[in-house]
Image (tube, rainbow, N blue to C red; front, side, top):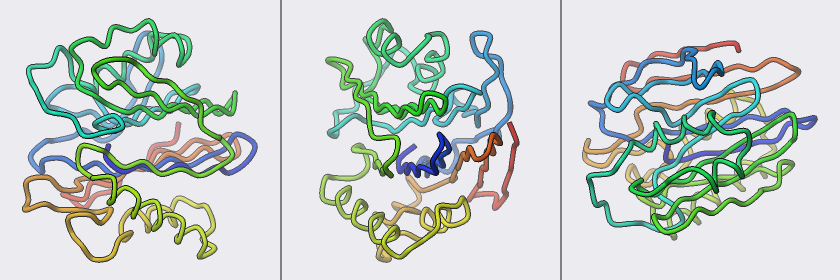
Length: 234
């Protein structure tokens, strides 16, 4: 939800991983299949709003970050939870149709990473309360995103450096290796490390990782509060 990495594995395969920074008391149901607009979609469900920040179907994988390119002023009430707006994507045929036909008025700013391995496409969608923005990223390159809501531009740039250092260390692109980065990336500053905690108000509550490799898709969900790990094969 607040830190996301994408690793290409070749031939349309990939790993995408997300750290969720949230209130400790905001409960989640581990990943399970749900019928969304006639499509089987796997996702961990936020029990407070009923939505999610990480969802995968046979065709698309979506990961949400709070905020767009810049920090915004939180001004509730909002018309609909971003985690539900994200699931509405599955009612559209492609990213462009969703980006330019969906009504985002009254929705808090967010960033959505959209992956289609069959087409080998990686899109970044942003809503900033004024206009939608959809750009295509390089599917064959690795990427990192950090939430503009929680991390200023300097911190986001530092995290990009940590990610480059991790890659330059020769780490093989595996789920275990990227999970170690998502657990231990940083310099020891608990407020800006990848696993963060800001006076127990907001902290990293879970890490989710989705891997598509050799026609097998695996969804790994780590609950850091309960110290439990759930794995689902799609």
